[in-house]
Length: 468
Image 1 (cartoon, rainbow, N blue to C red):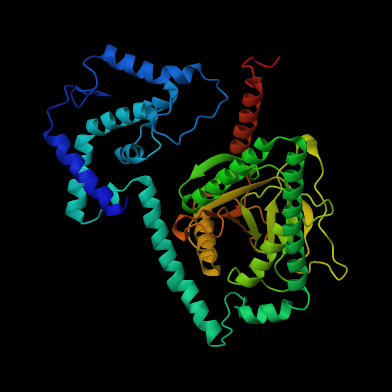
Image 2 (spheres, rainbow, N blue to C red):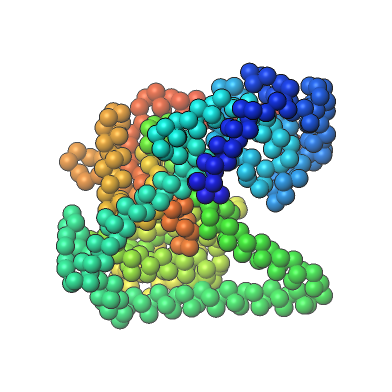
């Protein structure tokens, strides 16, 4: 649904609620009951109990399939809000229009919307008076609007001027970083880096094809053709999930490093990351500056790391893709490595005889220590100009809030960029983040310690009993 269609829907809803007398409960009631759905509170409770009885009988660890709006739900998921954490009418409207909202919850959301009639009418009047529909948009539509504005800014301020500069043969400098012609980068890397990465990619694809063939042969030997059918169905489901990720801010089915949100502020949050392991490679040669606008070098680094995950390693092991892709201010790209069962070690990258220290295309395994980061989210393309704007804004917010940066005096402030989406995700929906190392205050450290202790004290086993 477009922004304008949502606004029209809100106008129609406001008009309908201002004239309707089909609903017997007063608008001041916390949750009015529709006359055509139930005639009393007892009957309403019975309807909700009927709608949720099937879900109550299911095991708690079973994840329901939300592909149909008629799937059963736990009652706690229907009445999940509290008075202190009430949803807005825009959020309720989005839930009502979502195709995967269950029938029982949809009825309650509709009741809440009708109860919010005065607020909706006031929002519509404000939108007409100010000639702005921002107040009528749902959260997702607001993100789309903000994403569209961000992408337009990035195209006009960064992408088009960069293309014009490269086409004109200019070497305009931005903070000492010169934009490179992609053709020149390929010519420089053609003798060494391109064949090396190309060979690894081909080896990875060959390993995957060999593994699929071996699995098919095992199915034939086992005399169980259903195993092959089941595997095809799983692959189809994975493909459908990937297709769905085109429209998701955060992709489904991918894991990333663990962190805890220590505090939230205007425009950013403080996170405490646990230590984790990555596969990394440099996007530049030794002492060579790097810019986010150097898409060719970034693509080479991504392919080198992807090849390692997909089998270009000493064990020819195929590992899961993860998120986010991390890029450092020193020109290093990292892929998070998912922890193995039992703490098994990761395979070593395939080494080339001509590799030198920190050369482009050289993959290494490294441990990233625990860190506290101030993280701000932004959308669209990750251009050098956008990174600078986001970093300046975050540093300004940290200075205003009195948050101390964890950097030695007079040293450059490092940063990391987290990119969560595959390249085919729509730019206006992409989730990007910039992180800067900070120091927690004593109060924040105490809150983290207390939170960990409380989690340990209230830890429960899988069968629901407290640990002794």
